[in-house]
Length: 319
Length: 128
Image (cartoon, rainbow over all chains, first blue to last red; front, side, top):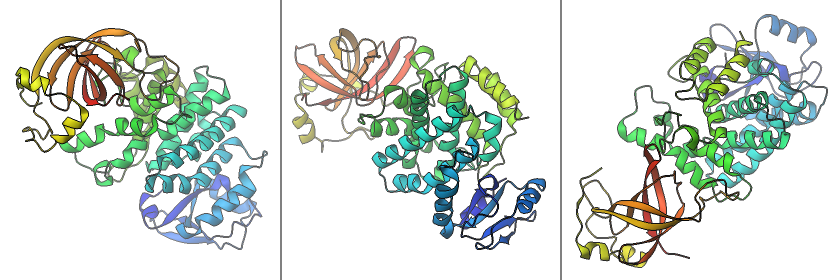
């Protein structure tokens, strides 16, 4: 489990799957012990060995940590050693792609620059879709490499990856269309940056006024993106309608059944899945089995039943 | 939603131009914080709905075709109307009011009230 508190202290998780023996990444690696303390695992100038990686795997350690200040070294390593190396498995390259893009995407959002965020999302979406489509990546191959901490970038990346896998399983084979799905999913929460963090991370039930702010985020996102000529209507509907529910109980429009675009239905299923399986500052992640049951209980009522069936069949293989 | 009051002909005819709405922005706001007081205005109007922003493939039905809409209330700033289809923020609607005046509206929000019935809050904008 990736520690949210360590991230708030300025340490960044790096998936051990992206680390290769005898390759220097030029930054110190830390390991988290069961008492939650960090300890220096390997100095940056000493490459990991095969034996190191084997022991980490045996110990169930799938993430090490680096200092936030060393993120650029790690990204350079990913670009040079992982991303363009075709012999590296697709799930690892997807993980690397996310790391490489993370800072630029977050900076675009924090700089209130949705246009730049769309450009980054388009490139990232294309990369995710092509890697998943090229090597027919399954959910079980990629799930453990994903982070599950519900930071904005983590969440949208997870939703994007899940959307592509689900869309492909539902028969959408065209990689260009899958790239559009991925990009739409990366942008689905772009309106959330107008919601104060203290409201998003609030442990207690939001007040009516806070609910109103939260409910505005799909519309805010849609209005920011709708004039972009390079985004298509289904992508905009992923942004605008991903909180709509088939029975008309969702928001912002309480649209129902046929008035909800199927790309938005797709996004809704995996959005809820990721939201519940991620840890939050105020709660532990919900077990995958319980999340599947929740989706199945509401299939046909809130969520598209075929999509839920297809998704939960994928998820069953995780267990 | 705040309670609405009966509209007098003067109130409704006051909906002249966007410039005038802006010019009257310092008028007393309604109790729920709205810029303009709303008045009951229940009638049927002719309308032409434009494509929603971002929709270029004409996949949304009914776009560009004259239709009838029901209005619910009016203010100096805009209209609340009922439509059989979902409308989207920023979408433009050209309407002909009961006195024959043509106005362009922009959808601000839309809520489904029931099967085939959406309520939309729209503001008056200048036709370009």
